[in-house]
Structures are given as C-alpha cells and as structure tokens.
Length: 247
Image (cartoon, rainbow, N blue to C red; front, side, top):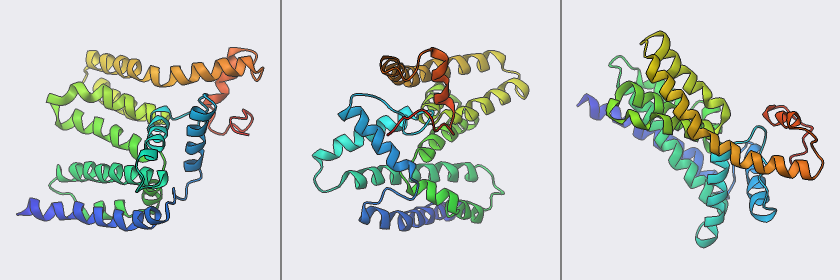
C-alpha cells in the first residue's frame, strides 16, 4: 500500500511537468534558453550547407544529431510543427528523468517525497526541462548509468553505452564517468573494472566527436580560418567568442 502511495508522487510530478510544457507546446515555443535556437542553426548548417558547426562550443553532437533528425522527420507529420515535435520529445525525456529520480528516492525507505516534488518544480530544473536543450537527455543517461551500477548488476554491460551517450550529449557529463570510476577505485578497489569501463566509454564516445570535428577542422583549414592544429583547441572553450562559428 505504501508503494502505491509513493508512486502517486511521480504521477504528480508528471502533471506538474505537463502544466509547464503545455503553454510552450501550444505556442510552438522552443523555450527560454537561447541555446535552443542555436541548435536549430546547427541543423540548418548540416542540411543546407553540408557542414557541422557546433550550436555552441565545444559541441553537443548526440543531442544535435537527434534534434536535426527530428526537425527533418517533422516534415512528414503534418499535424505537428517541428517545434512541437521537439517539445514532445523533450517532454518524454523529462518524464523518464523524473521517473529515474523517483526510483532513486524509492530505494531509500527514509526518503522524503516532498523533496522529490520540490526538485521537479525547482526553477532551474523546470527551465532546463521545458527548453530544447541537452541537459535533460545527458542527465537521463548519466544518472541511468549510476542506477545500473548501483542496483542492476545484470544490466551492467549497458553502463559504458549509457555513459558514452551522456558524454556525447554534453562533454561536461564526463563527471558521471569520473564519479563512477572514483567509487570503483577508492571505495570498492575494482581496478580492472574501472579500466574497462573507462576505455570502453571513451572508445564509444570518440566517434561522436571525431567525425563532426574532423569535418569542421578540414573546412576551417581550407577556408584559412585556422593555420595549424593547435588553433582548433579553441573549440573546447565554452566562452569562446572569436571562432565565428555562426555569422
């Protein structure tokens, strides 16, 4: 009976999320984060100019690829605009993330579910969730990797895949890999497991960044924007304003 009662908090979080999403969905508004519109710019550059240009440094290839695919696919669905297609996708991602957070809470008998509700209505969380931005998707796969590691030993083979997709969605999500490796090395002394997870995750992540970066680097060399490989390191600078990624 207690379990049934607790699941109601997740349902409530879904209702709250829907109330925040619905106005944006009706108005086909991508959200209040201006980076959402830069993601559309990346899509246009890929399909119109045949060049990958990060929506903002250092690039978020997995999420950018998903967004670009959905925008392209939306042309075949006449009842939804491409903005609404993206918002629906984001809504599903947030529902899944809310459920994952709920699962973490449910693992602790002392959990205060009021804190769970407060988290789902936190302004930072709401703004990030209701905008077309990579935070939610990256967090979903990052925390999913932790959940698999802690509670689902039979599915541990999925851990590097989840970590790789999280990092490919947002490079700073390497923090999830670092955290898991820290636990393996300094708490559980699982050195071989740590090495295997690290190498496998990096191996799976590498193509996501190498393929678009290699294309962008080649074009910049051809156009004379850069003269030597070291110049390309500026793409890793989140505050970079001199690279002229977008006119």
